Length: 205
Image 1 (cartoon, helix red, strand yellow):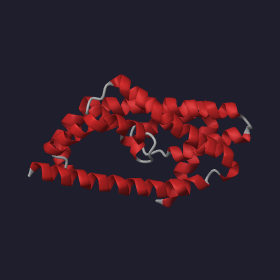
Image 2 (image 1 turned 60 degrees about the horizontal axis):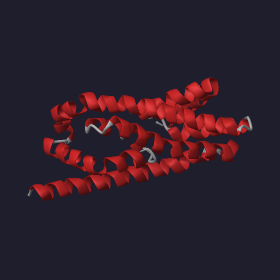
Image 3 (image 1 turned 120 degrees about the vertical axis):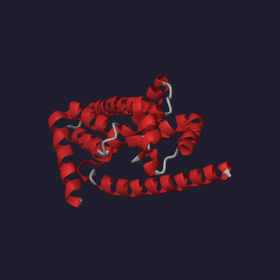
Image 4 (image 1 turned 135 degrees about the horizontal axis):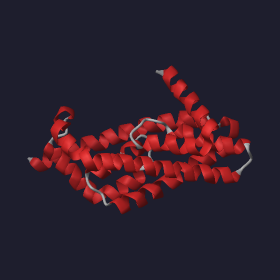
C-alpha cells in the first residue's frame, strides 16, 4: 500500500510538472469526481513549482486551475447523483444498510443543512471528494450548487498553493499533517453518522 501511495505521488508530481495548468485542472477534476486523488499533493506541489519560478502569478494561476477543476469534477458527480443516485440507493442501498427510511431522513437533513454541507465539505479532506454526489441525489438547485462549490474551493486551493509556495522544498511535510487530518475527519464523520442513525431509530420508535 505504501508503495502505491509513493507511485501516485510521483505520478502527480510528474503530471503537474509536465502539463502545469491542464494537469492541475484534470487532477482536481478527477478528485471532485469521486476519484481518490489527494489535492494535498496536487495543490502544494503546484505552489512549489511557483516557488521554483519565483512567480506569484503562478500561485493565482494554480488556484484558479484547481478551482475550475473542482467545479468540473463536482458537476460530473452532481449529475451522476442527480440522474441515477436515488434509484440506485433505493435498489441496492439495503446491502449497505441504507434503507428507504434512512434515505428519506438523509434527504430531510440535506434540505435543511445542505448548503453548509456543500460549502464546508469543500474545505474538508475526504468529505470534499464525495459531497457533490449527495447534492445531486437530493436535487440541490444547480446555481446554488455551483456557487457553493466555487466559494468553498477557492480558499482550500489558495491556501494549499500558498503553503507549497512558502514552504518551498519542504512542501512534502504537509502530507503527514493532512494524513492525520483525514483520519480525524473520517472518525468525526462516523460519530455523526452513528448519532444520526440513533436519532432516526428514536424518532421511529
